[in-house]
Length: 478
Image 1 (cartoon, one colour):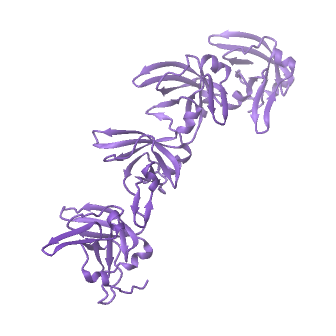
Image 2 (spheres, one colour; image 1 turned 60 degrees about the horizontal axis):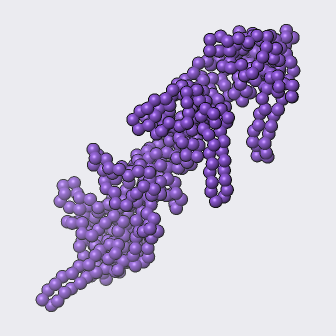
Image 3 (cartoon, rainbow, N blue to C red; image 1 turned 135 degrees about the horizontal axis):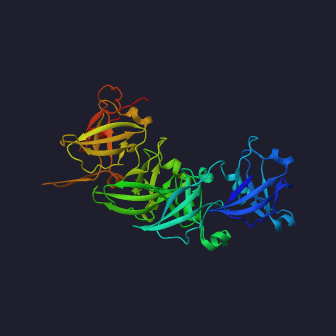
């Protein structure tokens, strides 16, 4: 029976072959066959039944150490075996004995490998600059070598690193695989102390690249895998998204993206898109929030301060502006969104107003009933024929009954000044109306109560109220 490996691993002719620590055979010959090292193995007849079709052979002459929740777990073979080296195997599969088995450098590597897979798979990584690796540097999965760097080449904007992963470990690559540089010693000093992270000896000497599966992390650039500077950079990056807006007045690099007061991402770049005649804002969503935020129909908008006589909202954005997001319920992922200037309309009742001009009406302006805010303007647009302005607004469902078929609406925004022979006549709403604008409505009390207006009904928006409108006191039952 033959064993094959990429190295002798320090084994010599006469090395024992063990099963559960009991000698069952030995290596009687070691020789080089091309680029592979081959071992002729002899198993005692009484133990041949232990060799199965899927048996895995591995070196057991090293000391294994692992960290657990209670401390360090160290596994060390007997001194004699530690000095001389040995080979162990497991008994898996059917009774067929293969002509050759792969010899793994350690039991963890044997446990990770898929059986009956030979050769290697090539991958291309991209980095802005070449990390401290060279041809032959190891590719590591949780500090276990599963491949090597084969070559690298310069390209526009960075460097491509070509690597090969042994096919027996190819199953470790998934859609969530992330690569990072794992070379040298990293020292992180902060107020809480000093953290020192050292790579395996092979990586310290030759450089190395590690990978693992991290959910919610951007891992591809076109057809190439992204190579991050280190594990911390990879773990914290998240997923890149693009926000599109017609113009940008307040968004800057580093601006936070929040949901219910918690930061879930940040702006990374703001640039002009000349072909599209718009502004594209690159941002990243932190890994732990990607699955909930980067979904089709999620709503992003710039939060602005609102100051009125009745109080102030979002006053913190004067010094620290931010983007708010309202996640959608869709199960479909998306990475490109429009950046809006206002909050997404709620699920209230929608109505429409028509007027000859926009006047001072703006999105977000309140809808008032007896100076009590019951809704807000959601959009102000030109009609299809550009002969009128269409204003849409939403009213909270519990107040929708107040709007009747014969209700009248008027603009209470701004200040109206008229000058005549008798002097100047100035009409203005409350200070809050002057600052925020608004639309008010009332229902006539000199005629029978009309039915509730149907949702999406259209009304005329008057420039100002008739004097009697302000005196109507119609009782409206719920």
